[in-house]
Image 1 (cartoon, helix red, strand yellow):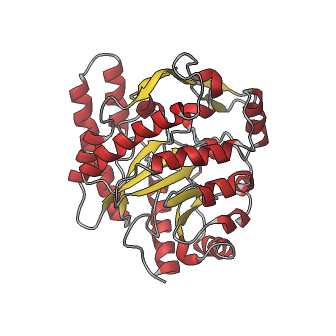
Image 2 (cartoon, helix red, strand yellow):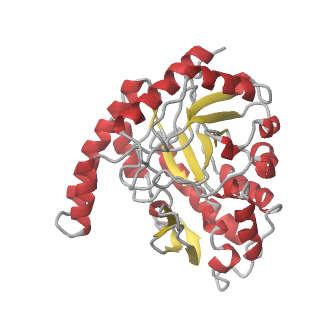
Image 3 (tube, one colour):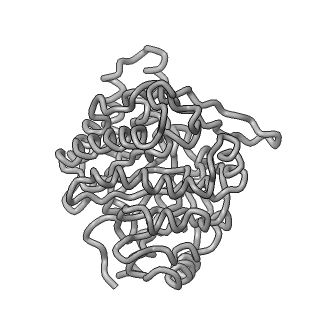
Length: 371
């Protein structure tokens, strides 16, 4: 069994890391007007240099900037597209005292367009910090985020009387412009973070989609066509992956359910190169949906949880990889944590030491399984 020379790698990861205290302090100062945007960026640069070294030290080949410049994994990108407006999310306290992030509703108030290069400067800084043999990965939210939360009601009827084909095509064109700007700067690895396909595995979320006038059985196939409009713009030599997330806020989750309702649309119909699938606990169901994985595509098994510090055992991980390999060839599988460690600036309730230990576990297990 071989190591992989192109991403995703046998040991990979989703991308976000716990924010260091001095970065959080600097962000707070910037919010209060005590420091300038340039001063905040200098602190971000220094912290990114450190997190790059951290990733290389534990043996990862794909390297991100930890999403250290972001507050929310999705809003910070999407609201920089022309025609998109977002509300700031609010934290809801559940009856049992736990916290949940009420997702912001993103509204499309004008024609969607690419008005500037969103990730370019961040990618260029990340690339400048890498040592030989590392590959910079850029994470961006999936374009489906512009539809699922608000549905038809969240998209201007004035600018888009019909969603087909103009809305989906405009969004895809904007993403295409972004991918081309990154590729021109040397980016070869982009991951789109998507909660909506995973939410469509959850009966509660499926019901919410129905109440917005959408058919949860039809949506995965429509989203596959939507994603393929983006993939049509993919520059040569770029790996385009998708991470499916069931919610990741302060160690809580938003959705549960087997991948079966979306598996065929996701794995067979989307023309993506790779999928990062959460499989860290029984919320994700079994591996049978992997039977839809065609030749030439990769699934990265998210078997190591980022929500809690308790360590998985290597033997247990190897057993689960063997189980997955009953449905998809081992050659088409890789290993990663189930999500980022800090999808929002708040971070999960896990220690920095556990973050390191979990990544080392992924790297060592992948070496033993795939060589």
